[in-house]
Image 1 (cartoon, rainbow, N blue to C red):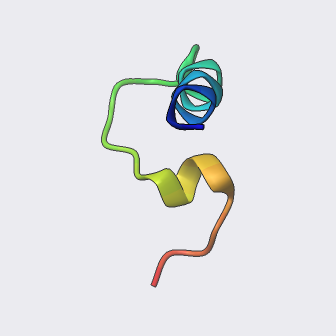
Image 2: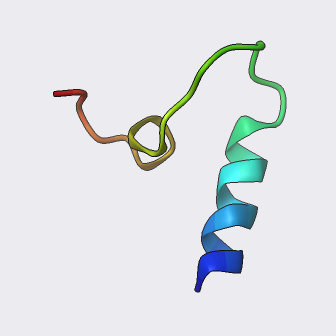
Image 3: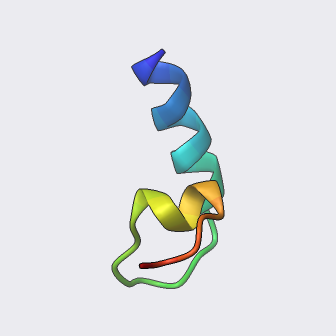
Length: 32
């Protein structure tokens, strides 16, 4: 399960500009 999430996050991150991202960004959750 962890590996699947890590792969999804890596695919999402590919092509994004350098910066700090949280899992909220990957999952599309609002920041609180």
